[in-house]
Image (tube, rainbow, N blue to C red; front, side, top):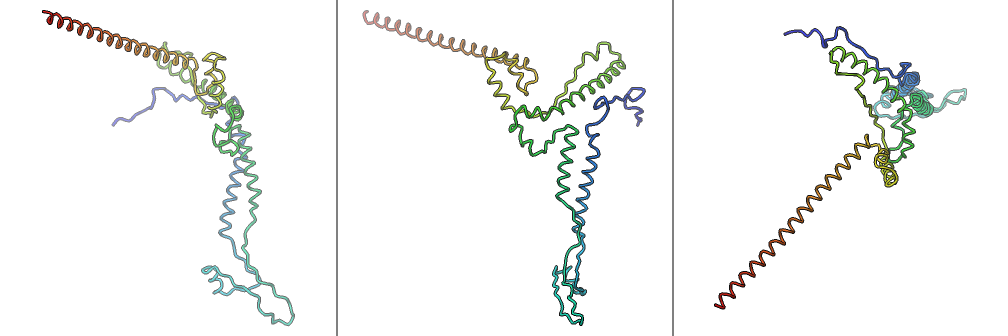
Length: 287
């Protein structure tokens, strides 16, 4: 069994950087402190939940017997009462009291901080929070302008990222073409397409296209529909479909006219044949 010495034929491993921007900073680099703080708060809340299950029972004003302690653990029963005061000082005994010794987690403050910190993470990183209740369960419930406004910062970052990626890909293919030695391959002939998954209000776009009927040409009209990447190709396909349907209609019409002509020809031939037979019969009778 031969051992493979290298996974590629290059003398060294080529590396190309896919930078996020000119400063080479990631989307969440400016929010790392907030994210760490959110993790700390979540961890503290988890510890608080564990502390509640491991809390201590404090009994004051009464000494519990071993049997009472066992009843508390097994039967979950606490029966405490004040004994008759028999001392001569007439001091009021401490009334029995039972409570759990637990920390005060201040859950409301923690929840408010978490909500604010999570919102700041999305605002600083300029990323849309798809889990936001104000965003809506469906893109159909938001107008097209509102959707574009929400996604505009992300689109700007995506365009910058696409330009950086195109630059790195051209460097990669330049190296490949030079290594292959094929002069017919040119990096300038390459085009890269980056598609963004952005929701659109299709019903609103369809309404705009309907209103533009008769106002602008078909290419301009279809350019308002996000589901069509190339309006010119869509118009060409529509014209081809109309021509094909017209040809099928002409063929059906010609077939119909041909059938009608054959039916008319058959009726006239039958009539002439019947007239000839009647004439022959009359001639025979006269003889």
